Length: 296
Image (cartoon, rainbow, N blue to C red; front, top):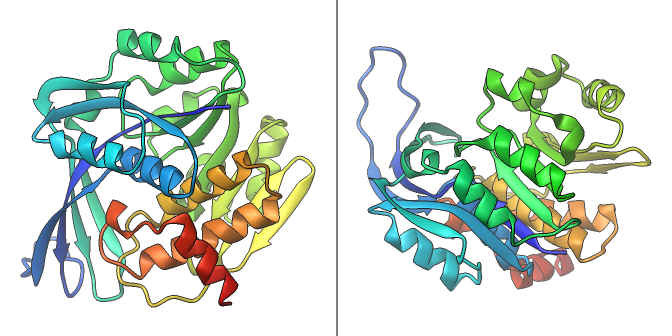
């Protein structure tokens, strides 16, 4: 089984602020940094650092050449990246004193993906291979449709959530990764068990990973339920925490580990990540996670 992450890559403009601005309010940022990010890039790097072999598909735009180099440096196969004459996708991220973030996203090159590029990329993959998706690129419904026809196992993180995602064929999705807000947007439910019951009733073969912030995370499959408490950490920046969790969970899953171990490793990786500033640069390695778990 191989992993194709068809996803975004961004330049993240990060501003440290005392608090989030209210409508009409102007505040001063204490600092500004420019870091690599994007949910797709973050998840590919997390998968690679967790020990998985991952291919990254997508588009690199003007000003984003260093993002392709970063993926390659981290062991991600970039043969399916395409260079386009469009401004590189980017995000403005404000991080407050509590380590919480506010993100404004501009798609740019991530919205330049075409059906032709998708067809060419998917032709290199077979039934049983994994396709990892987020909602930061163009042609998402087409990707789901074509990957499903090929028999690929689709992993979806429907973030940022938009009404258009309600029309997706979730019967084609093997694993759904959502946080509390996205879960409520999809199901209208707020309690984890109610969220699972609503999804399982409509999509019986779907499996769910629900991240709950400081309350930890839960994993539901048709035959198993796992509750994972959060590992204590001093939050510095929660950007990419969910992406880190996703990458480490999937890498552990494909290594054949039980769900309890998948959840534990993902939670520890996320805990390490939130104690650091930045997105992809905050993601730990598999060795760091193993050492942290051994010290518990």
